Image (cartoon, rainbow, N blue to C red; front, side, top):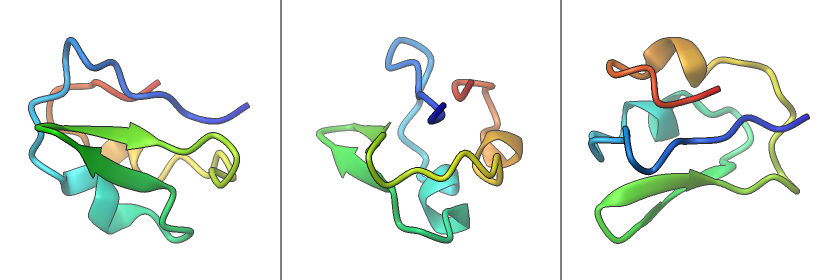
Length: 55
């Protein structure tokens, strides 16, 4: 199952996007989102989020 970013918690720092090996994370407005069709559920982004917005 793909990771998800909680928009209510995301601060828009972009740390997660830089850690994604398959480029599944993109910016939408001032927040980031994960494309579930591309995400391979590796979890690399989860550890990079300073506010714990990814689950």
